[in-house]
Image 1: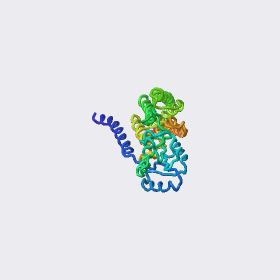
Image 2: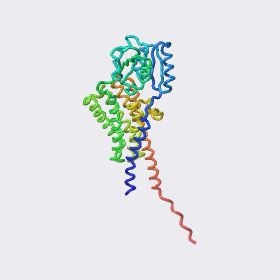
Image 3: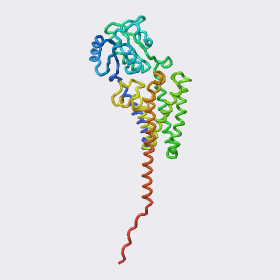
Length: 356
């Protein structure tokens, strides 16, 4: 009995260890790694500042230069850089976007302008702005921060899309785990896929209703949100079905480890991906949670620009999970068939000894 109890409790111990180990290793000391920022203006004006920043900041920031403030705004609005600094702005540059609600500013600011897009990630913007805030303080200037794509007043914490993505990911792997645990091999592949497809539609609708019409936290075209939700459940669900072929009742452990414990820091939804360790950054474009949270952010703030690549990633996860499951089942079926055929062949009996 003690051994049986120990085996049962090994599962929650492993879950706790994975959560604490991965989250702490990835997010306990966020430090920028090549966070992209820009400086705008004539080379004679920007080169000395850029050289000084590069010497001071090292590899923490990647600093590029453009010649006009219009180019700087385009880089920020298209999320090519996290922030763009204009040391000598024209009067019109001070009215672009809206006054940032995050950074304290004087009533009648003058001096340099910093363009940001808080909808691309509030924490990322804060880190990108820090070098320019320090430069303005050092030069005794007022820094005016202009937000080109501000957060919604219903999402001031910048967490609504993250929690919606977590909920959809949870629905994906938990539904597959439950189907595998409760029905086992009694549920055919066709019925499993059909059940996940139907459940995915219901889960996507539920998440949209809660975060949108009921709470008003996530905005955007309902069809795009529903497609994102359904693709997420199918991607994570079918991948988990494949894992269940190897892990059985322990499927929840690798599923949670991959899609949540690794997926959360790798998505950049909680902290900027530029602050993650190299192994986590390498997973950024691969895991489904990145595509789900990225899709929802694009829908809510950026008119669904570039959403196709996120949907393609989710669709590839779903197709890969299904294809690998079919291949595994086919190979296993052949092995069982050969084993049965071998067992059915009667063993050759030894010839009777010659009578003397």
